[in-house]
Image (cartoon, rainbow, N blue to C red; front, side, top):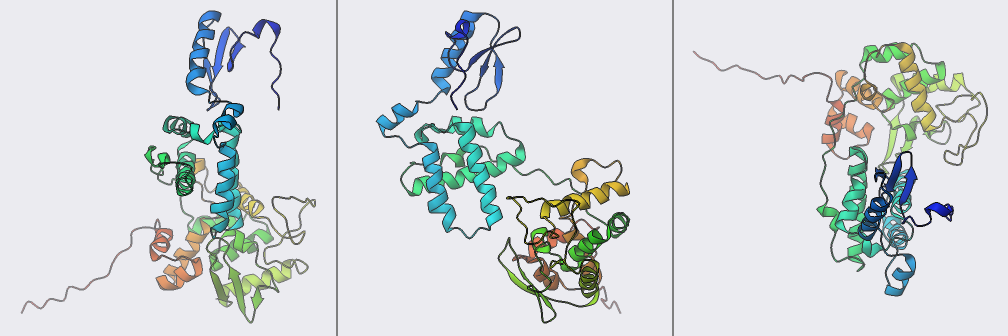
Length: 363
C-alpha cells in the first residue's frame, strides 16, 4: 500500500523520521520500534539520515539492476524446494508458513536477500520473546542451510547468532484430586472428552478426530497420529469401553467420539469440521480451561503454572504407571519413539524409589 503523502511542512523529513508530541521520533526500519529524536529539527534530520545510511537497504530497482535476490523469492524457494519434501504434518507446515510470512512482513517485501547480514538478523531476533527467539532462530538456521545448499549464501550466518536455552517450564501437573475437582464442573460432553484423554493418552488433534464408525473397527480404535505419523490400534476395554459407550449414548447423531452441539453453527476456514457437532481442538482446550477456572481449585496460581488439556496426557500416563503398566505399554499409547520422552511425561509426580536388597550374610 502506498504510504500517505506527508504534509507540506514535513516533506523535507527523511524516511523513517516523524513528528510526535513534543518533538520527533525515528522508526527503526527493521524492528518497527520508535525512538525519540529530540525537539531540534536539524539535529533530528541529521541523525535520521545517518541511521538510514546504516539501516535502510537498497531499493528494489537497485537490487534488480545488481541482480540481487529478493527475500520473498528465497523464502518461496525454501517453501517449494525444502519444506515440500519434508514429512511434516499440515498443521506444522501452517505454523512454519505463518512464521515465514511474518519474516517477509517485518523485514520488508523488497529487501534483498544479500542484505540480510549477521547484524540485521541479530537485531530482528532481539525484538522477540525468548520462546519466539528460539523458534525463529531454528527456522533461520534451516533457511540459511537451504540457501547455502543452492548457492545463495556462502555461509550459515544464523548459526552465529546467540543460542538461547528454553526457559524451564512453569506449568504444573494435574493430580487425580485436581482432575476430579475440575471434572465435577465440566459439562457431560466435556467429561467424556476428559476421560477419553486420560484413558487413550492421545493428543488433542487425534482425540477430536476419532470417528465412531470409521476409526472404531473390530473392538479397536485406529489412530493415525497426526504429529508422529504413527499408526496405533488401541484395544477397547475397561474404562475406555465405558467412555465410548457414554459418547454414543450422549450424542448418538454425532459421528465423532467427542461431540458437542454448539449454541450457534459457525464455519471457519481455519478449522473446517466434517460435522456440525464435531469439536475443534481450540474449543476443547478452552472448554477444559474454563472448567478448570470455574472449579477454583487452582486459585492463586500464576497463569503460566495452570495445567491445560495437554497435561492430561501426563496424568493419564502417571495413572497407568501407578496401576502397574510397564513403560513400554505407556510409551506405545503415547506414540513416543524414545522412552526418554515417556519418562519426561511421567516426571513431576513425586520422587520414585528404587527397591533394592541388602541380604549380605555376615555369619
